[in-house]
Image (cartoon, rainbow, N blue to C red; front, side):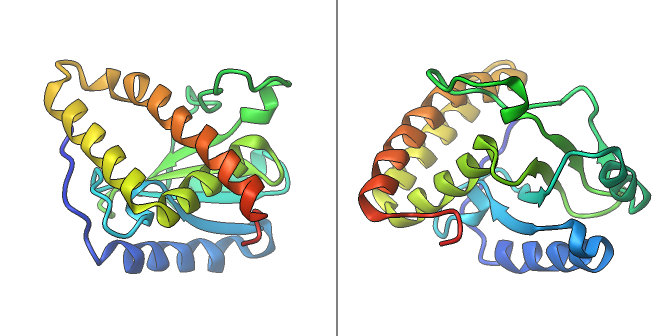
Length: 185
């Protein structure tokens, strides 16, 4: 069963601890390490799982090997992200490596994405839009609560949630164009 919990003020600190570990061990291979997903949005309810985006120059086997050597568990069957409607281009635009935490550690989802790809931008823009629009974040939180309570099969949660996330993403793109948002913001 999926459990959605109220925002926890400890989430940013927990992200910082994991980010520091990644930074120490990956050095320059980590172009960016960002706290993404619902736990990165103050006040937003979420699953108690810290989402982290590790941005790399290229999805090379060496980065996956280094993360595995640190104990992170790779899900090799997850090779890419959901592609929003109307987003054309090659499949590699949405490629990623996906890892979870080492045994005995705090639950995380580690998304490894290439710099400059649409899926790298998507995660950051989505986060920043929700941070700037608390009412949208609250509505999204309510959607997640209702999905978690109403779905009989928790494996369907992302499939049902993705179209709603896309709607927020499309609004975020319009907001980004109006505000001159950039990935470096």
